[in-house]
Amino acid sequence: MLIPFAIILAMCMLAIGYIDFRRLVIPDWLNIIVVVVGIVFRLQFGYLTLLAALLFGALVLLLFWGLRYVHWRVRGVVGLGLGDVKLAGAAAVWLDPWIFPVFMFVASAVALLYFCVAARRSADIMSLRVPFGPFLAFALFATWNFNIFYGQAIG
Image (cartoon, rainbow, N blue to C red; front, side, top):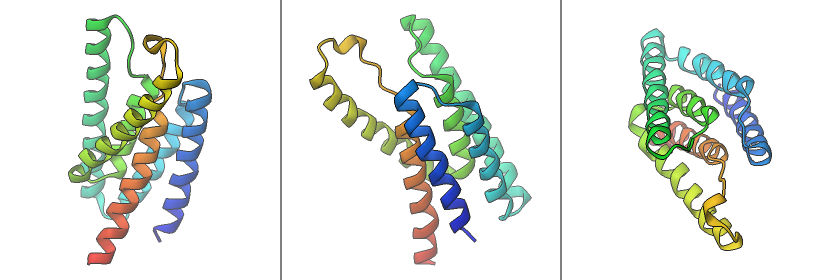
């Protein structure tokens, strides 16, 4: 029963990664698909699990939006796109709260690694724009699969 969810999530994450790398934007329709399929996935575990996932997703969305706002107020530059904020909120619907820090670590670590490689090739490091969406997408797919399939493997 989990394979269709994994396939849909993989397709959405690949599309998000490709589009965000090319255009530096995550389309709203892709974020909507991710959250709707995440809701359907959570619904199979019961209404309380779904409610908890929706509340957690809303909390993450608000926290990321707040982080985006504070960065903009302090630096005068938008550092986190709204698509990234929405994707983080959608990811929170898919993931258990205890694995969310792993999701953030994986996304941040891979993004930092990419930045280090890209910075070596760039003449002006201050103007380097790195899309965060592909790294959030990779981290969501990896941590969700680890959470689901590792949980099944250990019982």
